[in-house]
Image 1 (cartoon, helix red, strand yellow):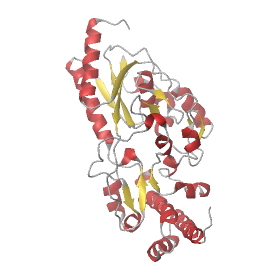
Image 2 (cartoon, one colour; image 1 turned 135 degrees about the horizontal axis):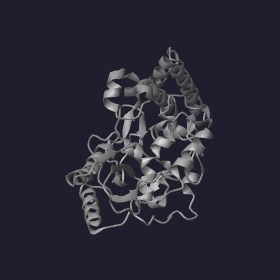
Image 3 (cartoon, helix red, strand yellow; image 1 turned 90 degrees about the horizontal axis):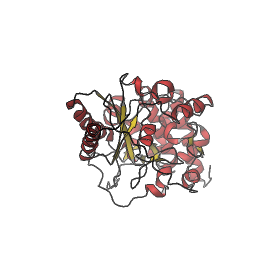
Image 4 (cartoon, one colour; image 1 turned 90 degrees about the vertical axis):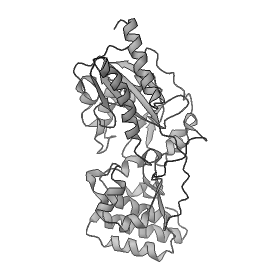
Length: 352
């Protein structure tokens, strides 16, 4: 694509609209097949490392071809929304609390889509088509962002944006506009550092940039299958998601950020969760990915976290766990029995 003054002007206008809308990084890339994502998705899926995860693994040929989103695509724009927030909640809950990964405190994808839409509006006003893609598995946003020059691939497989690290949600705008693509990828900033590999509680990062979903706590709490026994103690107090590989990453370190929004769900009272009816759980936590929209998936995780965190002498916690140990759902009863044993081991000072 030969750059022209008109293309430069439109490109600058589109990217300026994204920055004004709050995107911390923006860039443009070509309509080529997304590599190395296509090769990596196929190889890891074949090796079983995707577990039961679908998302972009479901159809790698589709999710790595921008034409799947818009057959007439000329360029793809990447945008990153910074979700660094400080937890100012007191966590004065009625009982043990399950920790929530930072990206899930609120739905940052709403803000991301709105900002991407501002760039799309500039394109549409200029007579072009623009399709916003964010968290819909139709395109590998991380590869788009890498190729568009927003950041580099970290060893934890996250995209690291200079000055922000991996605390971003990513999205794309697929367009038939002949914008000017980035030609200068961001240089690797990890060097010999391997803190994310060593800091993963389940050794799920099996190599630089390679995460085995069968061991990754962030996936295990979302997936429909039982949480493997060997990883239940390592789950600790994590109810949803896991930030460990980001917390130890030097480029992702931050001490100053806006306070979390008042409605942020930074922690969830486990006893409430295990007593609440399905509808109440889905109303409050339904924006999370819950396999099959089945609240028992998150209850299963809450049982494990309760076993890991409740006072081993708590009669209330034990009453709840005994109730679930007799549940007709075999997954719930299994996890509850494990949690009761875990309380006994913790009371006896035995480390699992």
